Image 1 (cartoon, rainbow, N blue to C red):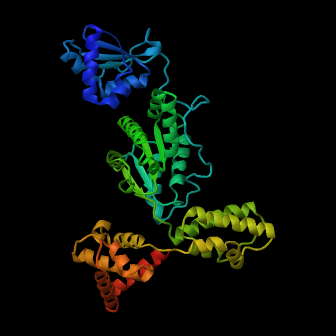
Image 2: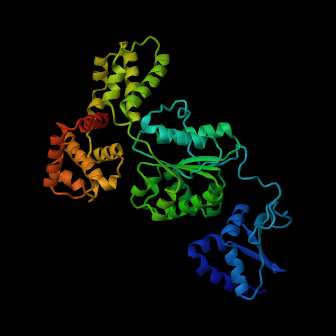
Image 3: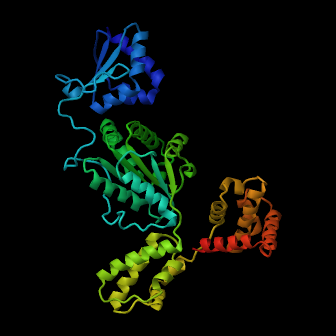
Length: 463
């Protein structure tokens, strides 16, 4: 076979697999020869050969056959040790492909060691399952995270955690990583932020080390990416993330992702990535309720009592903070930290009055400004209707009544005008909002169930 044949095959492969795939996976191949129906190639790494054999070997064989060179099998050997390779223990694959591995090559799952240069972020020793306070708003996310941390096969991949700032997403991801490394020390667990993923990707492009980058990220057993919304709008990074995601899922490797909103709500994120992220388990960490905030404060206070011995914490202080500081857990814990430190410095008992003086700025900033969107979500959840139906045009009674409840609460609990409320209910006229509000006011006097629903919803929305 002459070089012209391989050249024609490569030209056809560009058309078949696309230029990006060609440049990444086909162009680096070096054809060593074709003998007895076997095409032999050198590849940069064993992983590279495995990926090409799985995804492109059928295309390669087909194009050779069309060019008049009968090829029944494609074999790959690692370029740096091409001579003297032993055959892969798996033998020829079903599609007639063989990947040879160099003797002594380390498997993907291996013990951690000093030369394990995984480009991850450092884990916080405080963020474990033991220190995570579980309540109704986060119990599903906690259960799913626990399931992944057990290390066995799970029925959902990826696990996608989303929610606002300070609700525990990062805590759970660190807890998963800690637990996996305790249970299965041989696992390659990689946790990093989406920003770090992008930085490593750009660095690899700049240094022309894309093959090393691909092999590094595709050889992990568990990949955990925090704040994935960061890559939205960054086309090249999204492309590489998509291929990394697919490669790991195809190998049955676990992926855990977090973001500040659901996949479908991340603007400028490619549709194919949104679809992939939604194919597993998507879990919302809801804003904390009063009971959960109080539990977090009680746990934190026990720790500080051991650190600041002799300090007296008066009754009612934790309850006051749990009621007033509803923004997020970080602010809540930061307030308690400041309070104990201040009381220790001035040598005073931690009373309600001291808390109000010491935390005046935090308390002012935490005065809750309820949004119409929050009311809509809570009402939809309470009545078990879809948020899109609540806002949409449907007039079924099962949807119309919850919609009127949401309109009533929006009028009562926010400072928005009727036209502004109407705009957030699918562009409805302000007279429609007024009618809905009046209808609920009339029914409250005769419908005790509706009155109870309204009281419950108000309590939940007020935190």
